[in-house]
Length: 121
Image (tube, rainbow, N blue to C red):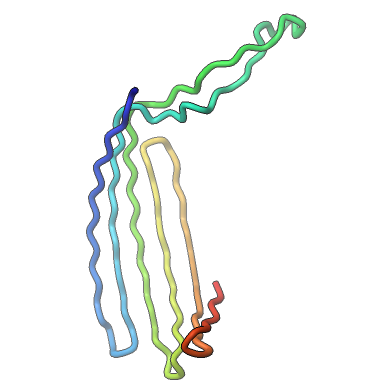
């Protein structure tokens, strides 16, 4: 019956650089507080290291009760003269549990007709 509370704060800025180019910056902060465990996940351990014949036990994982994460993303989009577009993105993530991530993406989108589009990433 334990639950977690989540507070999410986001701010974003967009700028039209030219008639064909857009730039965006987004910042996000999330704070989770309460029961953050996965109730279906447990781990298995050896009851006696010196005598494996004794058997194994299981226990539930224990997580901290608070997690705060931050992410910032920078995106650029350029519309090409022949109806296609190219996009670039960088995202940085960090949280209070020691996780850090860097994500990069480059994408090309090209419409073939009113119903079909090709996208490469």
